[in-house]
Length: 139
Length: 139
Length: 139
Image (cartoon, rainbow over all chains, first blue to last red; front, top):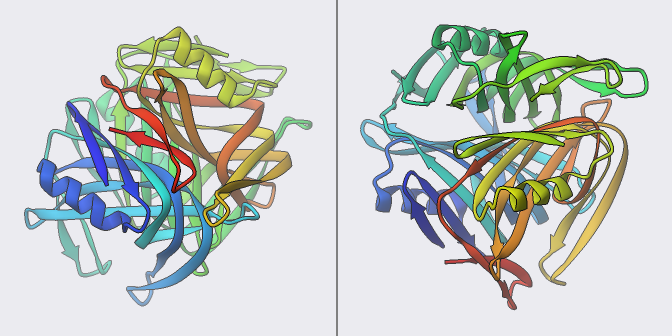
């Protein structure tokens, strides 16, 4: 992974074999990012995306392998108890163009991933909401 | 729904049971937003997305129910005749990771929806284009 | 196509019959954009999206025809050898809401395409990476 920072924006290249969420964390910690929006495209050959079953308050996940294009990757970097947190959803298309996606648990880059991070000058923390079963934005 | 504004950016949490387009409108009116881009992720258990049939100049819509992750939500806030207008497209993945989407008519949040609004310092109005059958950007 | 620039942001309307990548190029050249992120929604009745087969280092593409909503269009404008370059991934939903997408080769607008370009004050060039078989960000 390599990146360059331009004022409040970061342009990053995540490389073959690297896991996307780990690389977001590395950039956020190095640049001391407390709040940001993230978007990216790229290619992955192995990713796991989940769906939250609200009735059970549990994530169920699907793993996909093969040649996929990351068609959308959208989310945020912020904090929980002041520490790094990221929440990303991703969708990816297979060799027929069929698209699969959900809550991103893990994605291994197969060719490249091109990411833009827009840093926001502020703070939003998270807190576990017991009723929902998720760590929600706390204002 | 709760949100916080940081200069020209808004970070919002839309809550369980709330409808996304209504909440975008509430934020836009409170903050007097005339032009902005919008992105979000989240979860929905009931949404309606449409496809515009250009031959007939009519929207056809599909309603989806169940546990879905909002994998992409992209669009703008602007004005038509000076009044609030928003145009959003959304896609969402089911428990197999299959993704469905289109022009967003209505989406009920099931767990949370995390939105970033980038306010743009300008104005773009809309006008009905009779040939196309839609309200298009008017510069 | 028409657009308006507001400081470091551009709002564009790409019109029926126009090809999206060509219009991005026209805007980038007119506005002398060297680095930017791009997002859009819209409608297309003919688009080709590819998937890169990393083993063969070749793109395979799928062409789609019919009434589709562009549900996500994400990517960047930058340079290769100092010249204009754009890399966009797109997904689009059909009349059942089923979503297809990948690396964007070509998309003809059927009704309208509404685009926001966020210009970044910096430079990132590209260089062919022989091992990967693609033109990657070069920092």
